Every structure is written in structure tokens, then in C-alpha cells.
Length: 123
Image (cartoon, rainbow, N blue to C red; front, side, top):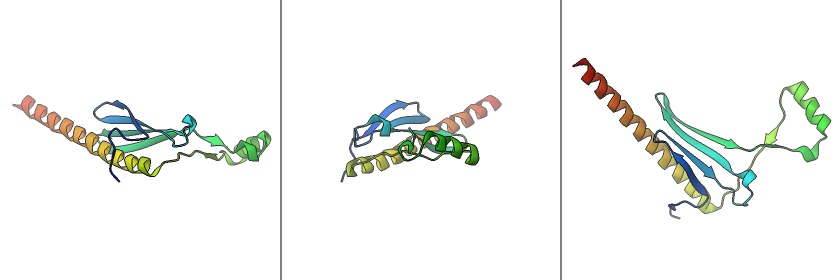
């Protein structure tokens, strides 16, 4: 299986150099199952953050049960899912690897430029 470019199910929303934002589409086609992925580089390292739309299992319990659980436990359980085809899963993994490499290179270039600027200011 080969990595696709453009990748099936992976949409690049924005490329800020030090950060990339993707939408990962669920294979079922329902947009509530999609999730957003941010790959970011800063002075402390690389972070990958995913955002999914969460839902309660409202059909299994009453509204009062959810309220009581929230009051007594301080939280309610939520769930989210995204279904990948084999190709989408492969593209997802390869896209993450490539995005991490890209933002890391951007961060290193920015740090090199900052060091060069500091040296030039001292001279």
C-alpha cells in the first residue's frame, strides 16, 4: 500500500509553517465523526492535538441520570469515533509523520535564524 498525495480522507486546512491543521474525515461520511488534528512546533517541542465532537450515550440513560452523575462524579462519560478505511489509516499515519517532520524543520530553521541574529547583534 502506498501513501497517497493528496491523501484520501486527510484534508490540509492550513499550513502556518510552525503549525499544520488537518481535518480527518470519517469513512462513514457523517461529518460529526470527523476530527481535527493540529501539529505544532514551539520552543519546547512538537505537539499533536486532536479534537473530536463528543456525544453522550443519551439513549441509554435519562436526562436526570446524567445530571445526577455530573453532580456526584463531577463528569459524564462521552464518546467519539472515526472510522478509517485501510488506505485512510495508512495515509493518516504517513501524514502525521510528514507534518511532524515539516514543523520540526521549520522550528529548527527559526532557531538557527534567531542564533544568527543574536550573533550579528553582538558584533
